[in-house]
Image (cartoon, rainbow, N blue to C red; front, side, top):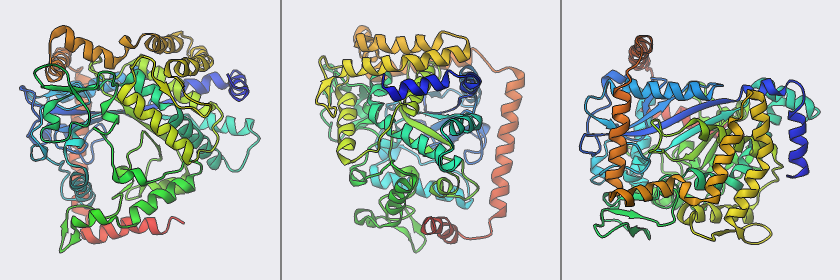
Length: 529
């Protein structure tokens, strides 16, 4: 443990901090494909019984009509967040007939881009913007990539914590700048160590061969003689590699987290400057919008990152403008696979470890990061994505290569003090148990989710599709056999009705055309500095 981390832990052990650590705030965003009983991508529209995908606070769609996204409100209770997510699943199952939710990150049987319907959001300008953005993604990267699902973990500390930490630090700069700088430090450390999360929680070592039909197999190997499954023998999270959410065009985009201005400037320039290869797609000429613009990024969300600094936006406000206005409010972790071994894709032990990991990233010293270190981080991340369970795998460090298992054990050891503090705050032993569970995976890679997926395929003589289908059917029965309470059902029904009414109000209140709407939106970027 470094002297800096030791000092931070001593401070947090002081009076009053336990109550603040009890109030860590979390929110979950979980994506799931709707599938037919045969395991194919659903071609039906977003069910009317689920309300408006534009305005519903709990149930929306991501890229496709068939890619549902479930959102839990900010909560200080891990159990309550998981219960809420389970209730959203139950309500959804009551509205989708014989369709099911696919239980893994890598998709079901797909028949090329034409089989993937782009999400619809209505006739309001903001709805059209969301749809055009998705058209642009399809043209730039193909629609297949957009069917990959994941879980986003939103994390923040309460305002009282930041006030206390700022006071203890001697009130450097302003409180807003202090909070932002601390979150940026968390993000820099996250990039240094996120390979560990990929090893521990990656659950996508294989994919149905239909996903790559007619495309380059990208070095994947057949799982068996049938050729129905492609995989990496030591892979962990193909979703996070070249097969998944990745962009060759963005590889030249250097985004720096050493200051908020650096981050905002890098993304603003990528949004404002044309990218010649994308000029082939119409961006409003004669009213034809196949993308929002011909820049490297249409909007901030197109930047593929494992973690994002975030702030809740005001109506019509660009995310970068919100960050410039009031600083970082929370971080969004975006590298978590949907686990087929949990009914909602994530469990309480995993969330406790994520809290421990993120607190470590926040509390440990986080020096500024340069190009050489960013390259090292990328190499390590990709190595664990593709070969994370390979015996003897070594990762790069500033002091030379080292065994991944040694680096992982050192990190987990350094997190023990944080787990102890969180346990003390919650009068439990669950945080240390979660940390120990992850250490067991380092000691025995067969305990990792990625190894479990491949082992179950071998033991049951099943291709990836059949294994994932079996879990999808299992969890469908689980939720259908446990219906919502009448109180919860009525709450969701009310939210459904209210979301549809909110969409109608938005559409009725439009007073400018789409060209003007986009001009005003993108005008915000020109006035950021």
